[in-house]
Amino acid sequence: MKVRKAIIPVAGMGTRFLPVTKSIPKEMLPIVDKPTIQYIVEEAINSGIEEILFVTNSYKKSIEDYFDRSFELEKRLEQSGKLGQLEMIESVSSLAKFYYVRQGEPLGTGHAIMLVKEFVGNEPFAILYGDDIVDAEVPCLKQMIAVYEKYDCNVLCAEELDESMISSKGILEYENMETGKIKNIVEKPALEDAPSNRGSLGRYILKPEIFEELEKIDLVNGELLLTDAILLLMKKQPFYACQLQGKYYDVGSKFGFIKANLEFALKYKELKCDMLQYLESFHKNKS
Ligand code: UTP
Image (cartoon, rainbow, N blue to C red; front, top):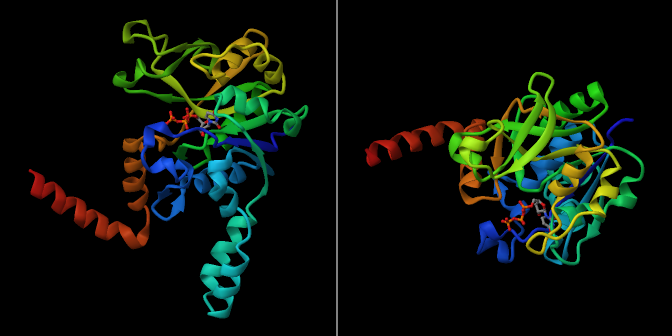
């Protein structure tokens, strides 16, 4: 069955990015001139997704507004003949069919996904975390859908990690490294105990049976974790990892956000030259 629906949970607290996330959702912070969330939505659409459901909360209204029509702004741009900008604004709201569900309390990623059971129904579905962006020639989710279609399985996305990152991430244990079949995820292992150097990032394709497993997991530090339900489902159904061809940025962290801004700016024709000159003179002055 085709993967048509995507869930983007955006109801987290964004504590790693305080104080700005006190009143601005981290998903709305711009990477150059587009909010993070738009890159994620565009990835989903360019991967063939038709319907997108955001798991949101009362602090994240600006996300709903962003993907809605802006009648007054559109009228003004039209009246003042700014047709290029008008087209840009209109295209955002017509990107896909958007739906919203509210998570009353941030009880974790597992809890956020429990709320989408009815929307998903009996289909496989994609999850894209609202603070992970990927720069890739073939969209990350499209790469994962290819693995789903090959094996008719649940799919995680793997990235190769530097040694320094291994003890702070969920590390994949492979049954077969060549096919990508996974048998376990080991949370934050010591470097010498790590089963591989690959971590999984915030993209998933899951079968609807995940909802039965979500019912069985317990709170950990006040949160239900999607990974715990995934580990239960892994005992019953095959999981494969798609080896990411591209670059991943954790834009929910300050350093990841700054790196993404710098590297994406270098891709903008109108910014590249100024950026390079600036970086060169900055480097000279520092050394
Ligand atoms: P994270 O753990 O990265 O986000 O969750 P967070 O909790 O907002 O971040 P920090 O650690 O406090 O800085 C991954 C994704 O799941 C969403 C987040 O918004 C993010 O997109 N999420 C997390 C929810 O929707 N609900 C939750 O209860 C927790």
